[in-house]
Length: 308
Length: 247
Ligand SMILES: [Zn+2]
Image (tube, rainbow over all chains, first blue to last red; front, side, top):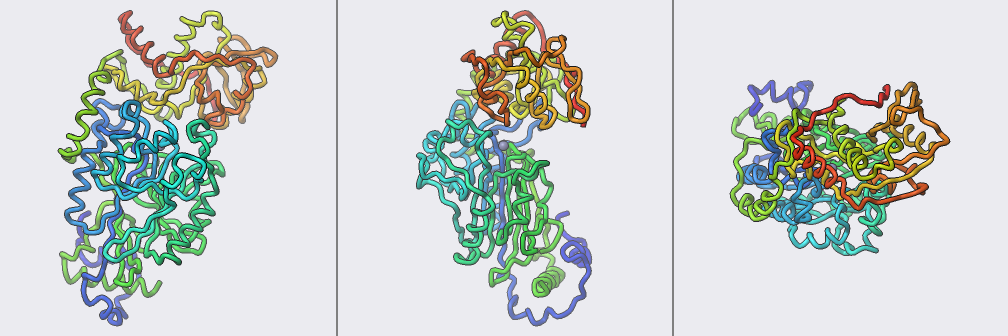
C-alpha cells in the first residue's frame, strides 16, 4: 500500500478508527505549518556476514538476493527524498564469505562507509579474527562503533569504542547506543582476549537514562546483538525490553530473525518499545520513519501497523 | 497519551486536506534487496577485491546431484559435512576405524550447497571459520553427557552414532552399529572450536587424549570434493538420519 484510499483508511490504520474528530483546534497553533513536523528515517541492517555480493542465482534459498552495491543504490535513492536519514547496523558485519577470509573485513568497512553508515555495534563474529584485526580494520570505517557492556580497557580497542553517540537531525537529538552478547562459549577466548562482558540490562538502563534525561535526546535507539528471543532464560531483546525504560527502538541481530515489521512491546513503565531485526546477509534493508512535533515529541512511527 | 492522539488527529486532518502531504504515504518496513541496480561506485570499489578472489573461488571442485540444506528436517548438509570428516579419518587414521564418532555443530554450517557445480567459494561459505579438526579420546560417561546435550539443545550433528530419544532419554545407543558401553573409551573427531567448549560442549574438557590434525575443517571438505571428482563421482545427498530425537 503506497497511499491511503481515503481518510477512513488512514484513520483505521493509525488510530484504529476508534476516536472521534474533536478537540484538535487547540493544537492548531502548534502545527501551523507542516514543516514543523520532523521526520526521522532510520535505515538498518544486521548480521551482514561479509555478503558483499548477492547470493548466486542457483542458491537454494536466497537466489540473487542481497549485495552491498544494490543496497547502496537503494540507500542513495532514499536519501534523495528523505532529509534526516540515520543508517545503522546491529553487528556481525564480518564472517561468512571468502571476502572476510582474504581481506579481513576491509571491504565491508569501506563499502559501508561509502553508503554513509552512521554507527554499528559489535556482534560475536566481529571478533573472529581477534581484537587486533578490528583495530587494523577500523581506519577503513568512517562510522562509529558503539557498545556499553563490553569493557575494552585491557585490550587494544581501549579508547576506540564509545558507549553511545548522539546524532543531531534537523534539531532532533537521536541517542544511539550498543549492547553485545556474552562472548564466553561463543567466541574462542584467545580471540576476544580481555574483553569483559557486563550485564546488558544494567548498562542499557544507565545509558538510555543518561541519553533521555541528561542529554535530552528525543529518541533513543539500542543496537543489540543479544538475539531476538530464546527458549531458555538467556537474555534477548524480548526479555531486555520489559526490564528497561527510556528506549524507543531496539534494532537487534544474532538470531538472524526476519521480522516483517517491528514488534511492539512494552517496557518496564508500560511505554511502547519497538523491537526489529531484518534476518541476515543484507537480504533486507530495514526502515522505520518516526515523526516528531516541533517540540521533539514522538507522534507516530511508520513501519509498524500501529500508532504510538 | 490523549495529547498524542490529538496530534495524530491533526495529522490525519492534514493528510485528508492535502494528498501530497508526505506523512500520509506509508513507507515499507523493509526493502528486499534484490532488483535494485548495482551502485557503480560500490562495484568499482569492490572490483579489485573480487577479481583476485574469483580467480580462486570460482574453481569448480565437485558436482552435487541436488541441493544440500539444513532447513527444517533436512539433514543432508550435516551428513555431507560429517561425511567429509569421516572420510578423512577412514583414509588417514585407519587405526580409529570402528571406534570414532564424528561430531560437528549445525550452527557452524553457514550456507547451503546448490545442486550442480560446487565451487571452492561454496565451501568457504559453508565453512568460513578457520576451525581445525581434532581427535579426542573421552570416556563413555562423557559420551552420555554429549548425547544428553544433543537431545536437549539439538545443536550437534554426528556420524557413526545412532540412537533414538524418548522423554529426553537416549535409547538403543550404537556406535558403528555396536551397542554402546559406558565403560569403554571412544574417539570423537570434531573441531577445535567445540573441543574448547564452544556451543556449550563442556564434556570435551580435559579429554583422555587430544590430537590435532592441523587441518582446517574447510580444507578437509575441499579435499573430499576434489577426491570425489578425481574418481568421477558426484555428491549424492543423504537424507536419512541415524539419530532420532523426539520433540
Ligand atoms: Zn550472525
